[in-house]
Image (tube, rainbow over all chains, first blue to last red; front, side, top):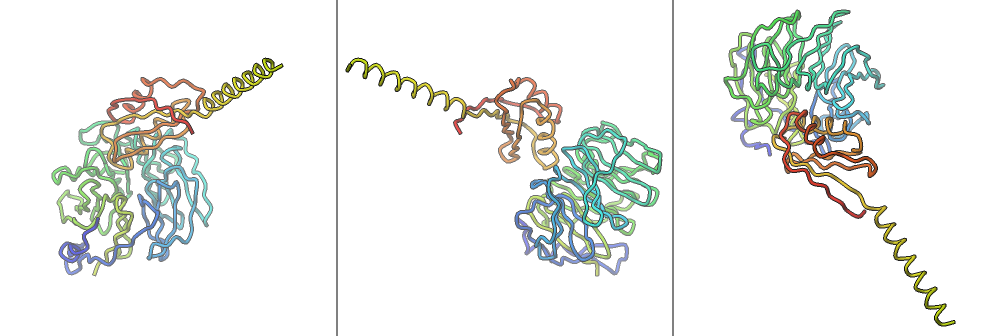
Length: 266
Length: 106
């Protein structure tokens, strides 16, 4: 249960601009939805609801406006070029929603429980949970990043991925850390193990800062690209699985509590 | 005449009992309960579901993260080996404990 009386105390934090800080705005309850992935799209929220095998569009009161059913355990979501991307964990598929129409993206890759997808121009990255790889597609080229292990550059059940400039960031869930790779697949940096993250479930990048959800500790941690911890939000969330930041608004999906927590940068 | 009636009645009753019993057997549904260590998050739960659904003869998988168990519904035709169930649990990244067959009348 989210303790609202903590909100003011913990909501003040950082941003790239030291004069600005994240301020708690609201907690949106979602009746009958167990949110795992989230994005914001034209004043609405797009949420994956794997417990009910669907993706839904809601307003900011949590009411469902639109839904797409029969998606087998949809996981994290991305928005790129007015298209919504997600994965089907059970059916090993990458899917897209364009103009409300659902379709599969045919890829010549054998997945085993794809959990996260990110698209940036002609680049697409997919975090594949059971293979322990991130597949990076760059035009015709496909690069495999990671492989099962605990050393730097190895992955252990990756759940989310983000492309940012020429880098690939991975929520290396059960290694309890974030890893940064080049878009050539070379290991660059690891963040998070010092803070004892317990399942790095989702991530986003905003203004050169890395935001990661810490599932079991119900926290959001913020790092720079050098690995410096910039801040921690806690006592605000309930088993968070994803974070999405857009136009100075931060949205955190509380899988445990069935809600979305919203912050504003001001 | 009375004897014939008695025999007929007995035969009809016996037929009804056998038919009822067969009908009951036909309505029996079988499930497997697997206790699993390490289940804790949705990725784990869906991952276990995915691996268990790959076993032939399993029609439905219900995961309870709170109880740390998976309940498998069977098609009633295919024999499911408990060792295969345990192997899939391991493949999903967890430690299997007790595997119990449950027969219930639906």
